[in-house]
Length: 71
Image (tube, rainbow, N blue to C red; front, side, top):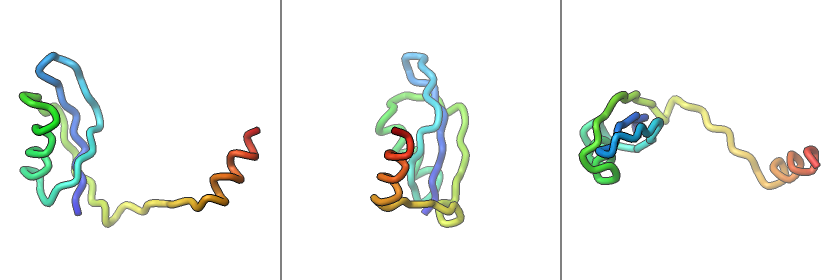
């Protein structure tokens, strides 16, 4: 599934950067975006293919070892 990284300007003029939304295509993702930010202006959009992005997960032992190292 594709992921879209939007930067928007809200109707109040605030800038919101890096709103990540999953969608089957750009119109689907933009529809979901506009449900959250009514009347926003899209200032930037980048497509991310989540199938190609490697994600690293950590198990609880790795997390605990990191916490104990920093204390």
